[in-house]
Amino acid sequence: MPGPEFYELIFRLGLALGIGLLFGVERGWRTRRLRPGSRAAGIRTFSISGLLGGCTGALAKALGAPGGALALGLGLATFAAVMAVFCRDENRFKRTFSATTWVALVLTFSLGAYAILGDVYAAAAMAVAATIILALRDTIHGWVAALSWAEIRSALVILAMTCIVLPLVPNQSIGLLGGINPRIVWLTAILLAGASFTGYAAVKYLGATRGLVVAGVAGGLVSSTLVTVNNARQASAAGAPYRLLVAGVAAANSVMLIRICAIAALLNNQLFMLIWPPLCAAAAVGAIFAYGCAHWEPNTGYQLRQYKLPNPLSFTYIVGFAAFLSIMILAGRIVGERYGGTGALVGATIAGLFDVDAITVSLAQLAPQSLSLQEAAIAILAAAAADTTSKAAIGAAIGRGRFALSIAILAATSILAAATVWWLS
Image (tube, rainbow, N blue to C red; front, side, top):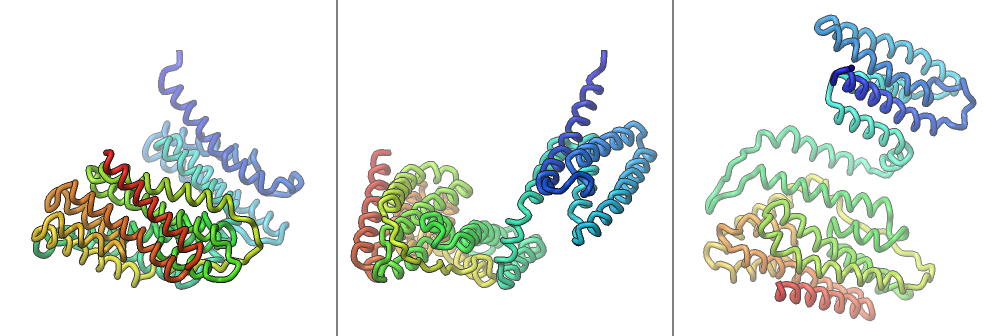
């Protein structure tokens, strides 16, 4: 009877074959219109390449060191050289210049060998990730073409600040009243900026004309207030579809409320358990409002302008937010120490008019040391209510008319829903 080692070997060889099939299906589908014999590698070649890598890995494992390492290296080098010749001839035949097929073949062989010698889950995950990248070729090219040099430069600067400078930043509190941990502040700023950039990229890719509600959801990751200002300006024009614009604001406000929950969940789970029911109730009201407004808006053919949001990965944006976050944390500690829950409530209400994220981070770090969980939760809800109320003020000042009335109703019902759930809980 075969032992466990035999069955494990068969399983790993099957995985190596599966990896080759995965690559082969993607490559074969992309070149499916070519006649047989006009391409360097299709589904059969990729499948056999994965299995060949697995067999080479099994041989290397059986030989042990150093003979196994030599056999594996020689097998990979020989395979890569032979495939390079075929891929070169394919490029000449097609009059193209690409190394993708050759790199995919070498990766297939390598992952097949790693499926025998390494972790099977890691091998499978890398194969799936690589296949997704290959399948999204045209989409990725479109994304890259849509990026500006300023956006690429900003991302590179932030990556350098995170990967190079961050390890050198002190990981201890500095200053009075418990101080501020520079590394935690910087990491928090980076994480929030990354979430904001997701929305920024989505808005830039979708545009207002490709779905105002979806763009509002994405814009809410950057700034729901800016979405409100943009939509209010458009609503002031004659003939603008005000219901769609209201739907965008409602969607952005709901995302803002969910974002507060996410920040609290990451930093203070006890605080999150207190605030998520009222905030999610308010977010649900906004979602229903957005759906209703979008559903009942007739198609008038009105051309909406594109959103204009700031790049959240710009160096000045990150540094400015990190500085503001530090100030809010320090101010929150001072207010909490001197004035307790009442001072935190007033401060959070005022700060919520400008930035809900920063005050949420500050209060999440204060509770339950300087403030009780109940006081911190009430202060965060007050900040969210202030931010929601400010949208009604923006609608009245800029949008006016039916847009302003709809935003005021949205704000009132959202706050009422949150207050009701808070009182019941």
